[in-house]
Image (cartoon, rainbow over all chains, first blue to last red; front, side, top):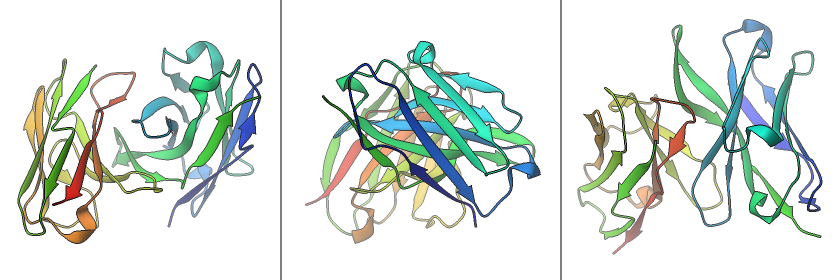
Length: 124
Length: 106
């Protein structure tokens, strides 16, 4: 059974860089055809897709955040990471990692497995 | 692509039939998913490709629609269904979500 879990600092100062890690268990990245995404949700608000990274390292980012975002994979550790630079208070949110649903060889772009989320507060 | 859900909230009783609508500013075919989110939890995928029930989801949930108008129906509301529901378009990047519909106990 595939499980995801986010980890990282709960509090970050404005203008600093956020680094989060998502550890995937129950499957090896070496099986291929994996898209892994980051999604965030400000307190009391809706969901925002940040981007995804493919198992071969290719990425696709939300244009609204593209200039500040980078994602990468560490296949040896079954982990993928998110970096978000130049933080402000509007980046305060619960950050989720999630697996993109693939049915057969078709990528559906829905998210079928989610981590529990990690709250990140941007404050001095 | 902007997604507009209606209503933004509703009150219903156990056993009621509940329908939530999601309208997209543009779209094509069946490129839509629905999620359920309970307080303090991650969203849970209910339906994808507009009408395909995700494995393990009860059959009282159903989805329909095409193009730019979609609906999520709960045929007989159960106590565990009180939650917030989100639609998500699968048609174009960036992937986007609706604003949510909160289903509360009447």
